[in-house]
Length: 315
Ligand code: NAP
Image (cartoon, rainbow, N blue to C red; front, side):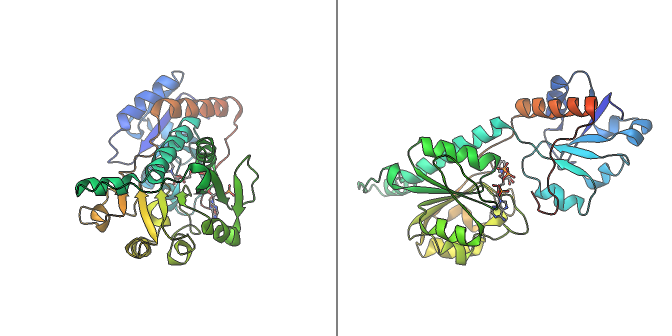
């Protein structure tokens, strides 16, 4: 095990490589954090771990002894797709700061929908003075698809804000003051009672297009949607049908199949959509670097690799 240098490998066009190299170096001064280009041929032959941000798989192949990689992102679908069948262990970022930032975004955009802000903004444009019935949060159900590191933190924040909160996961869960559902039948039961649906699922073979006509129709009339997970979890054209028929009142979308969202995409101008530029929960370089550093120190001392992604499951 070579424990003096740790490579940071990002996508070739990634704009923040230098900022990450500095933040990681500050967090672990006992190691040399370097880009692959700065490694000696001997280092390339011996390194067993790398820190990654959507690396080019061909670059990883320059490190034949690599056993595991620590990603600085929470979502791993792109990495899994790029790597294909791999023996490499993939550790993803689990950072309480990220969960907190996401919980804040979930609360902010839930309140945006709860207090009818898109509707009042539309009314202002036509100088219309008209108030709508107020329904308190205690009489509204906000449901989370996904009760993982991010979903659980968001659920707790929504519950504190007074909403009835439900959550859906693959495995059964019991969480304080949150009504938990799992499995296909559980999904339908949850959707049937939901006013605001929030997606915090990972993109996997099972969750791709999970939100389609069949499932979206299970929501009550005039429900709303927030997608903070991944674009492909929502079937775009099916969502459009549900918005055009007013079955779904409004959708806040932070993630899209193609990012940046192309200028000619219908989403930009649809009155039922709020477009966000994948900004709900950015990774905090400082806290993420501290977490990666703790994992690497422990590995260098004991050989322990943190829990890794279940490649077959896709998250
Ligand atoms: P996580 O800890 O792995 O949690 C994933 C949750 O989804 C778990 O509760 C899991 O169920 C559930 N799940 C997965 N597949 C399912 C299925 N087929 N049916 C039902 N439930 C399923 O992930 P996380 O850290 O919370 O992150 C979630 C996602 O958020 C990431 O993958 C990423 O795509 C997205 N994200 C977005 C942003 C942004 O800025 N927009 C930022 C960070 C992350 P179990 O608990 O039963 O396993």
